[in-house]
Length: 192
Image (cartoon, rainbow, N blue to C red; front, top):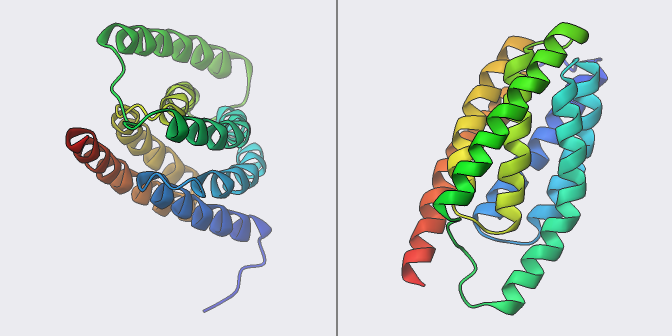
């Protein structure tokens, strides 16, 4: 096996490994998921800037910040209630989805027409909905996993087309864990 001389290869590999650690711990509601998320996302900020996926770079900077907030929020939720997992109201979900679609279209249009961004609309869509789904997971809202299923499927294709091979594998794992996370959290909610 030949060792790559490309530093992006190793950044992609290490960020992906930490991403798997994050999602595995998140499905188990383990607070150690947040430090893994912070480091993985920090590496992805750089990787996505170099890859000209600017919205993903911004998103991963947001993930770094949300990792600290998620750790705080999960600790606070655990201390304040016996039932940690909840569904958002239908009204809030509809407002969230419509708002995300509008912002995605606007950002996609701007990126397509005024930058050299690749996959402008798909990148904007996955980024905007990831902002929303990340906030939902910090609040332990079960529907976050449903959003992640769609986001991860679209992102997987986008990263494949960009040649980010470890990231493709990571997002395939994310996709599987999104399904697993939904059913795990739903089971826990029903038992509560």
